[in-house]
Amino acid sequence: ENPNENPNENPNENPKADRTAKNVIDALKLFYHQLRIKRLYSSNIMSQFTK
Image (cartoon, rainbow, N blue to C red; front, side, top):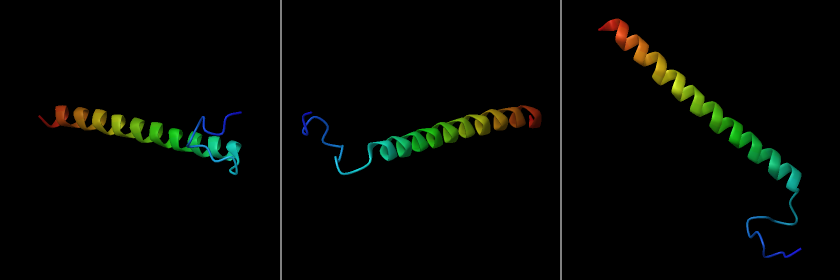
């Protein structure tokens, strides 16, 4: 293995824990994105009712 291949990876760190953290962050981003879409969607519906 070439240690210079991925400069972001620290060989001393646990790659499994790294991947888990990344998955959690990805899941949070997805959740936040869906939340924003829902909020936009519901505010659009409300504005149509209040016209």
